[in-house]
Length: 94
Image (tube, rainbow, N blue to C red):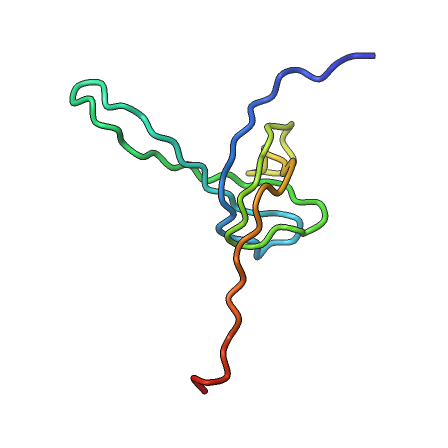
């Protein structure tokens, strides 16, 4: 049996789950500037496949590289690492 090749994996935060079986994940990384040696934050948005529609906005997820699933989707959600805190609406403000 053939083993899967090593695939890239990133940890990111879900910023949108408005599509069916698709989430948008933002991956942040720190990169040192080559000249000034200051650390700069770089962000990349990835569209990832979420088969069960289990992800919510604010969740921290592990995504894995996969074959192209659609025009923009090249990632798959492997695991939800941390759930977002849900804020309940209070009836006092109404």
